[in-house]
Picture 1 (cartoon, rainbow, N blue to C red):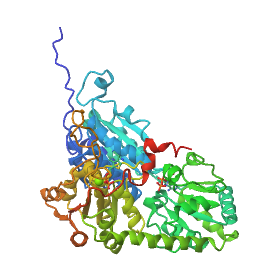
Picture 2 (picture 1 turned 90 degrees about the horizontal axis):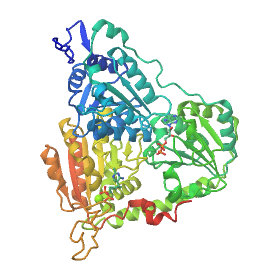
Picture 3 (picture 1 turned 120 degrees about the vertical axis):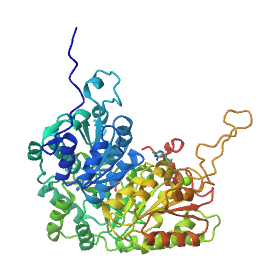
Length: 585
Ligand code: ADP
Ligand code: TPW
Ligand code: MG
């Protein structure tokens, strides 16, 4: 029979100051790559790490829900071009955060999710350890890259690898698994400090081949009705002057995707924002810059000219031809590709049809006039509808162009995007490629923290519900964020009706799309000490929003809309199964 007691498995405390723990090395390694902010939610095994990081000078923004902390990190990454960092606990905390990391990957936002994980051995043997989950293998395949670090001496390398994976090439979400023993392991400080590294050129230029540039310019020059299509990749690349130069020296009209709005002012004479279908149907050459030909540019959104050809500027060679044939791919980073295109442009003679731009400008004028009527026609409607409310909001947001607009919902998303012109790059953040609900509060926090600017989030009542509790985070950190909730009492609207008759099982139950038309969201704002407003008229809305933005403090505006405002699925009702037969091509 054994007489000795087993060696303690709990790590000893480090002997300060000569010794440090894995968590200390992690904090230092993050600092060394330039991370100054972390978003997260703590508990075993990462609480001490968060305290330690804060002591080291890393700004720690604590959330109520990991998914929202992840949305903040992703938005931070999108706006700064450097990975945002999310910290989660093991198991469910990890999974809650992972949804945001995957969403970041889908949207090409650079971010790193760091999660503590339990001791390996009982996980591998499935012995039921505390919060045991094989997190690395869950994350793999869903994110851009996933790594696990088991030894403190490997932490600096792991952080640099994660950083490079997040920002190089096509950006995305990276998962870094740090085991509990690794967090607690002890090293000599001097040895640890000697391992820290700063990556050289983590986002290397990717120079396009001269042949691809020549091919693209030849095609562009031959076009009679060319158009430039700008995506959020172009906004992310922060090459605003080069985009402006390309548009203005060629005189080619451009169409911005939702988050590329403002890259050039939406009211620029060459903006073809109102001419999506004209461009799709009539352009003979479309130059895509940091935009994908995914569902947002196909099918129900219009039909492309069958004889049209594409030039595509993208950093990811696998994006080319993924949906349509690309006649002239220019694979490289947008900055280098635009440099090459602009440098060689004078050698090519553009043959644009002189009637093309005036034609699009004519269409724009006509559509804008119609649009203006839509905004004013319902100005006195009571209760308000989406357009009545947007009529009040539009001049205020447009008059504060430096405010970052966060936007989600169905009708609330589509109508806000159409109604509000943007005039500065990277000032519109929405539910983007996956059209997911539940990014509002997190993205607002990330935008405010990363830029120091004011934010207005325009949220459908359903959309707000996904992240609403993290309004408290906005308040705790005293961020200049105004949350505007369009309450029409439901998903799409509040008039959903359960069709059952007495005796049927669902009789008397709320319809699947029905939420809370009489809810007073402003009371939620009050609960956390924010200036809160309940508004029922455009005049009240206008006054509240003006005051809220000027206050540079947390504010919440509950906008009472009519329950019948808004249509099923907003602008994408054609994607509902019963309508799909017409759409699948
Ligand atoms: P949108 O939804 O606005 O159309 P997407 O997210 O679909 O935009 O497309 C963005 C594209 O931009 C992706 O294909 C991505 O690979 C590309 N991209 C991102 N950053 C860069 C960059 N720095 N250089 C070149 N392409 C980039
Ligand atoms: C994670 C499905 C798409 S739009 C939407 C839902 C639930 C809400 C629409 O109602 P809202 O806006 O926000 O009140 P409005 O103005 O039209 O009334 N779960 C996730 N993502 C999505 N997209 C859904 C569900 C959905
Ligand atoms: Mg709604």
